Amino acid sequence: MQSLVAVPVILPLLAAGMKLAIGGRLRRLQSMISVLTLAGVLAVSLVLLVAADGGGPVVANVGGWPATFGICLVADRLSTLMLVVSSAVTLCVMVYSIASAYADQEHDAPLAIFHPAYLIMVAGVSDAFLAGDLFNLFVAFEMLLGGSYVLLTFGGTQARIRAGATYVVVGLVSSMLFLIALAIAYAATGTVSMALLAERFATLPGHIKLLVELTLLIVFAVKAAVFPMSAWLPDSYPTAPATATAVFAGLLTKVGIYSIIRLEALLFPGGPVSTLLMWAALATMLFGILGAVAQTDIKRMLSFTLVSHIGYMVFGVALSTVLGMAGAVFYVVHHITVQTSLFLVTGLIERRTGSTSADRLGGLMKAAPLVAVLFFVPAMNLSGIPPLSGFLGKLALLQAGVADGGAPALTLVAGSLLTSLLTLYAMAKAWGKAFWRAEPPGAVPPLGAVLESEEATGEEPVVTTAALPRPMVGATAALVVLSLALTVLAGPLSALAERTGAELLDREPYIAAVLGGDR
Image (cartoon, rainbow, N blue to C red; front, side):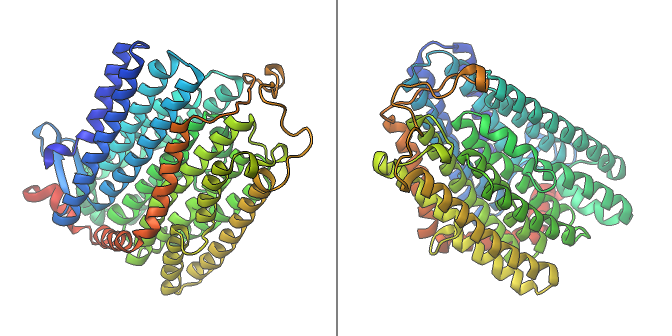
């Protein structure tokens, strides 16, 4: 089983190398390589999840070096669950991307550039989930930054280059802070292994621990778009292609949340920043959702709701209880599938009409009823309508907050309810304008008309199309069905989340599996 742990990292990198070597030739072979690679990663992730849930964390020491000196990859319940969900999402988005490229007759660029960058980003996501030391986690973040920058600026329009520059600057600043935190931690403890750090931090002076914790927390909060380090996200994501935006929204911020969970549960359990995290969670919820309510563009609205609902996950982590951690884990799984679905549907809307501005849309319920259903279901799920998984995840977090009983926790409970109501309002407003109302006069030009000039927007002219490629619709529908399956399987998933939360707060299974006799 140990030999399988590195496969989710190595397989996408090998596939990316093969695709770069092939170049733009053999389109069908290229597409097949991408799909089979991600399907293989999903299969291996499922095997690792079963193994970790049944027998404890699975550890692979790269190169045979012990974890105290070398790189180790750790597959426990949390990391394998994240791998399974992320693999399913990236597979669906890849099918969506291939179908889009074939429909647009893009013969070379998507295969030669987009797919290798996408696979490198997938490898970075997998490495981040499996990393057993802070330096390997840093390397995973850099892989993410490199691959995601290519995806964000794909097409080379002025708006995408501008957004990409902001994204890279934010990423580089957070990477510098990460290196500073690594240097402090290594100077104080002599290791970057998270299992060893969990033991050695207990012997350090309080001010050193607090310095390392706050520095790492800032780094991960930037990655997760936690307020006030979230201003970069709504300006960066809406400009990217639909496939890139969907996978960014679903996964990249969750890597930051995953890192915060590891930080607070493994390295600094019960630390002094829990209250600070609660207030940050509340601010993230409220500022994000107020921004979403004010938007008229669906992409920007979804970007702000993405920021807002990050607050729910931080809420669960900040409680530092089994109930809170379980609620956070459940909500992460739910949010990855739902948020990705919504951005893919928005891509379908843009392809069908040429615009994502709700003020310029109308009549889509009649013109594209399947797209309307595919938007409505995840929108209601994100809003927390019973009995969908969004409601169940929010309910778990609310119960954890009430069980805590403290003033910050109860304030967060009230903020969570308000955020959920405002999410419903934002989604209903977008639905009413884009789908339910009759098409406003002059809102969308006739099929084949150019919507905006390149000189006015800095982007390539967008041309409407009458038909949506079936694989694009099918990939989107598959993710919507997956989000509904989380509702059907809420019992087993909740039980797994509770076991995951208990394992996270116990810490001993993780430390013992990594260090073994080296303790």
